[in-house]
Length: 114
Length: 116
Image 1 (tube, each protein chain N blue to C red):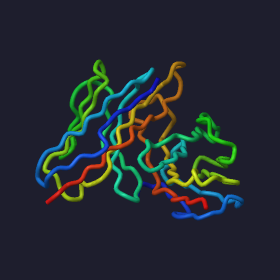
Image 2: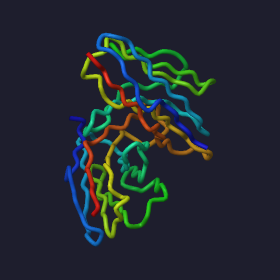
Image 3: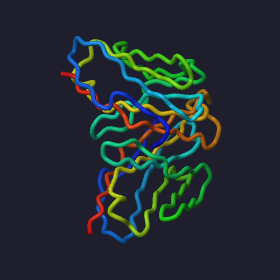
Image 4: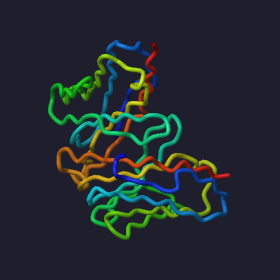
């Protein structure tokens, strides 16, 4: 079956580094996405990984290990505005190798404290 | 602004009402999606349209009826809903559906629906 797991909540201090983990089980992995969602707003795209390794984009980096079914999102130099929900999503081809719908985790609510 | 707009932003309706949610994308994308987001639950895919054709129906009850008249517009018609249908309904679009690498989905701000 399909399963995406990530912690429900995390708290970190302004200026610090935080790592949000995501583990997944799917039948036809075809890429992993991270989205940021502020309360009452649309999810916005942060990063995409399809090959193993680290992708860096400014203060945000995302890592993928396909053999372990594991990804993390790393946020550096945390700012108060980074307080949001972070959604891990896996593109799944499914058993019949068609399409590519996104399967979302429940999201990790990150609170950044002064 | 993601290039995907949704109206209305908030909707309160009774169980016997009929209403429609509207989504419009200005990105030239070919695929559009409806998602349901309930508190403390993952985003749930409801429907996918690719080149105006429905390609996914994720076992959604018939009281939700989608319509895609063209690649830029997507509607969700609602009738005889239940209180448990109260949620945030998000629309998204992507260049194409599925298997093309970085086919990122762009989300609208959502419609907050309350069913009394």
